[in-house]
Image 1 (tube, protein in one colour):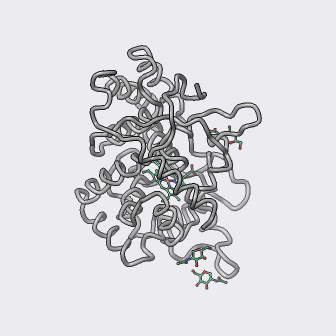
Image 2: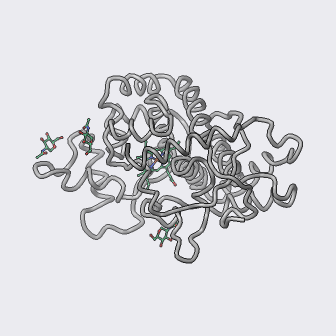
Amino acid sequence: MSALLSSLLILSLFSTGISLSSNYYEKTCPNAESLIRKAVRDAATNDKKVPAALLRMHFHDCFIRGCDASVLLDSKGKNTAEKDGPPNVSLHAFYVIDNAKSAVESACPGIVSCADILALAARDAVVLSGGPSWVVPKGRKDGRTSLASETRQLPAPTFNISQLQQSFAQRGLSLKDLVALSGGHTLGFSHCSSFKNRIHNFNSTTDVDPSINPSFAASLKSTCPATNNAKNAGVPMDPSSTSFDNTYYKLLFQQKTLFSSDKALLDSPKTKNIAAKFASSKGAFTKAFIKSMIKMSSITGGQEVRKNCKVVN
Ligand code: HEM
Ligand SMILES: *[C@@H]1O[C@H](CO)[C@@H](O)[C@H](O)[C@H]1NC(C)=O
Ligand SMILES: *[C@@H]1O[C@H](CO)[C@@H](O)[C@H](O)[C@H]1NC(C)=O
Ligand SMILES: *[C@@H]1O[C@H](CO)[C@@H](O)[C@H](O)[C@H]1NC(C)=O
């Protein structure tokens, strides 16, 4: 067995030691959720990019060492942390978590973990974008390790369906979870670098991935030329990129999604059928999304409640 697989196995064994519950802070910090919601709402009012950032941050957190706020730690001394690792180009709005943490620390010092704050903030981000709400199980602990080298464990936008399936399965997540959680791509923004493999030199015979709608590919090429590409250039994930809906799945069938990993959901009959169901029923999507978010956010790790989300105690 590979070192990666066995360390993930050990991780999941440790995970069973932490049990989450919906009323975890009921007695110790009853205002925690409303304070966090306020911090997220205030930030999102000033900056429409905040909700997408928080949703993606939570996903990155959970996929490396479990949802243990490892993504929030700053690099220190010789240690380069996850947030300074290669696919960090889209990670931003860390200040929102710090604001929320300050608010809960004033109300109830040392009680609420950064990992729980991030899980709640991701839920609040979905709600603020017009998506569904759900009860977030709480009681996560914060980890003491964050390594830039481990961001390699994140699925890449170039992944095919079997690589995606494997990445999710290693974390106890199914193909249905993969399709439902990919619906997070209804929100936010992508830099050109994340999909340029599909629009320039796709392979030795074809310049543009033929599985992209031609007029959509042309518009992507004009925003993201092969040369002189501005570092910050990119496009919204979908035309309604600040509203949480099932548009992503409709775009998938119109061949207008950005990543190979999105398009890959149509490459197996099983995932294609699930995507078709979500494209035709917003209700089916939101129900599945909630279930899968709870599953993903219950991959635990960590051992302490950090005082400051950027540094270990
Ligand atoms: C299935 C594997 C996944 C891959 C390969 C993937 C890949 C990516 C990439 C490459 C970007 C664009 C980064 C950039 O260029 O700025 C992105 C953005 C985003 N992803 Fe994913 N992602 C995956 C799953 C998820 C999941 C599970 C969620 C949450 C449920 C999610 C939520 C988001 C959001 C909200 C953004 C926009 C971020 C922003 O605007 O700040 N992704 N993803
Ligand atoms: C991403 O990592 C680079 C170094 O690899 C670093 O200079 C940059 O500040 C990081 N970006 C964010 C948003 O943390
Ligand atoms: C997916 O990619 C991997 C690694 O490049 C490759 O070994 C595998 O055959 C590919 N699977 C499919 C279904 O294309
Ligand atoms: C390039 O991609 C196209 C479309 O997927 C495919 O038909 C073709 O066989 C590929 N060529 C090479 C050399 O891989």
